[in-house]
Length: 418
Image (cartoon, rainbow, N blue to C red; front, side, top):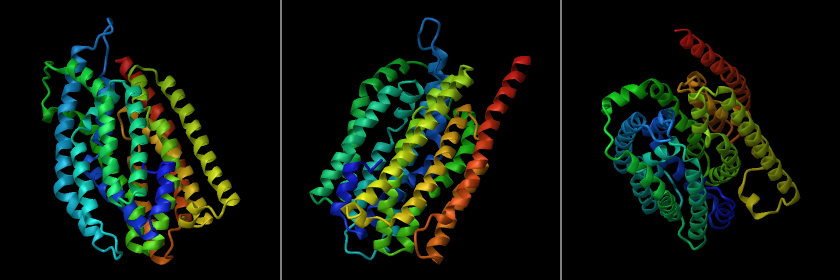
């Protein structure tokens, strides 16, 4: 998300490798809010998507509205708690973590500025679930695209003009402001439909309703924080500032391609859920597999392009601050193996179930431990030791993927026989 081409160039030009270690660690520490989020966002989107129904007259049904209101009330309460967590706990945790930094960069003011801005915008996050769940994907995609463009521009310009680590908070504020201003009309339209509609469900009732799915997702979601964010945090603590900065910069390049490819599937989960809810499982699967193959082709092509540029222009200034090509290719292989696993998991969860609990638990524990041991004993951020586990995870994921649909078909047949 923060690794657009413009930002990558400016980061390489304006920050030292030592400053890069702080820059990337900032994002990973602020992401601790994921522990409190516990997967409620994904869960609520699925429930809203399954509840969103139109009548024969193409009008939004009252029962559908009542259910969705209960999910929204629950979401706003949950995210208010997360916001307070960011303000009063996460800020302090980050200060303690970064206190071990031995460089000359002043990071405290920039860190607390990021904390307050993140906490503020967290409160309104549930509006995104409402928009996506009510099948307004085009609006949300356009706003994310526009917001992403502004984030890259503001972040790049702020870094270029010397704002340093403060650039992160400035860019996050502007991009979120643009995001919600663009969505304001859609939010107003949906909220106006819900005003005055009463629901019999209270917060406790709603919690009990979503708990079956949430309880399974929450553990993997919490551990997932360490899966996605442990790399830079471990590197920050275990490696030199220079090596940690090079690693963080290289990882951001690799993950930029992965994030773009992965979003092709992830952005359509509510569409898959809607098809499944309507009994169109074959259509959902066909749409998913088409998207997954496109995302795989895009990711592999992007990684080959990087290797080609590295070979043709090895003296390019960007490569002065990356890891060597061998380590980078190992990262490429890791994320190529990871993409079908995460894509299949996102699709299978559209059945309002969490069949990936054991696999996610395995990956979320194994990856940080193996990487930590690698840094501790080898002293280098080497991904080669993660690849055998990635192959195992891919095989396991394929089995779950086919088994999930078979179980769903059996369940539907049993319900039809009653």
